[in-house]
Image: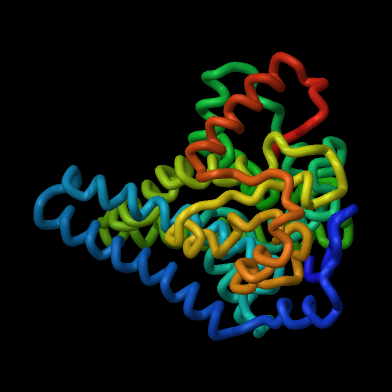
Length: 319
């Protein structure tokens, strides 16, 4: 994932420009991570204070906001999986595992899954994002998919399967690394069990209201965002045609770690998040799929799923 993969038919960056843009920074990563976790800490404290003094119902709006920040820790996992969040390998690993624990997505497993996604983007036979589930067969199933519930349930089932059965077979997991994935899943499950037992012993449901419920609610924000990345784009090796960049506000770009610049990221995955706006200014005229805000793109992707259900031979695919 740290190797630059340029898009077919696109004018590549010069070696000097690529080296400059690929410079990683502990400071940039720490500032972004501190703000992200700081927001979670702030709203978690507010949820605790408001629910303690006024009742849980008054804290519900705060849980929705908290859900956005917690669910978007997925973007921290993503950037650390690329080893570009920080210059320090130890920081990438530590923050990656911390964020993975927070969203119930084992880190080493995701690294392998995501590596194959980059290698085979939009290949219906080899892109893991296209292999883990069928296209929703009805509008009800589509709504469930956009809620993120299906994806959260899949993560939990997969982690438990790895931990309980020791079976970590998948096309994107090399045989020599399957024991790592099993061990990781077991350590994650032990961590969750310890938290559960501690909560029961202390007689507190605070983790439920500041973490678990917000994480589930936050999928309503995260899942449409993720569908915007590739859904409806072309089946081709070109990152400038198989991926979408979505124009959005500064808050979304900040907490998504600049991944709305997703064409840029797929074309040059070695370039860290903080350099993507500069990269965008260089390659913007080569981007084919440009989303004008996530509401508009969600309408577009929803429509694509419905059309693809009726006509699966349309020739394009989504994540």
